[in-house]
Length: 211
Image 1 (spheres, rainbow, N blue to C red):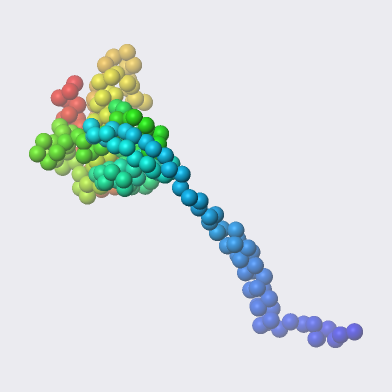
Image 2: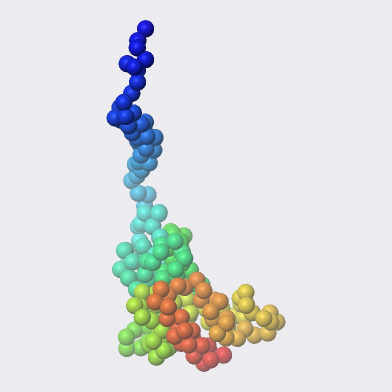
């Protein structure tokens, strides 16, 4: 029978064994965390109108509308911000409605009419919303500005159509483009520079003209 003293582990041996045991779960977890092989892309033909011009693309079915605009049509005015539909930098107007282009697939918009910031105005002839942003300094770094402007243009179409928001007090009366209405309707567009007061001032001016 072995001597009990021969079975005793010294401190160094104990630390080695404990470290090896602790590493085993991590090794197993890392083995399972390896990404699955990606197969060949499935291409699909899609055709839509962007800023009044017809485009036909053959693209991966997983391509978002945002990436189709930026990477395939090279319309880089539309920005990729959070890529999760939370910041609104990628807002474009599709068939008259504002959407987060990072959350929708390009192949879902066959024959749609898409308007990006490039389609609203030019440097020589600004859209009224763009001009108001300039007058009121409604941008700082400018990254969120294309989404803000596209969203604002579509917002006033909603107001003219009488579509209420969560803060509309009277559902039987015409919707007024008040500061409260504008802040509520634009809440999905984030400005990390904090230029909200100037943005609202620009939109209140446009609302006053159209009211």
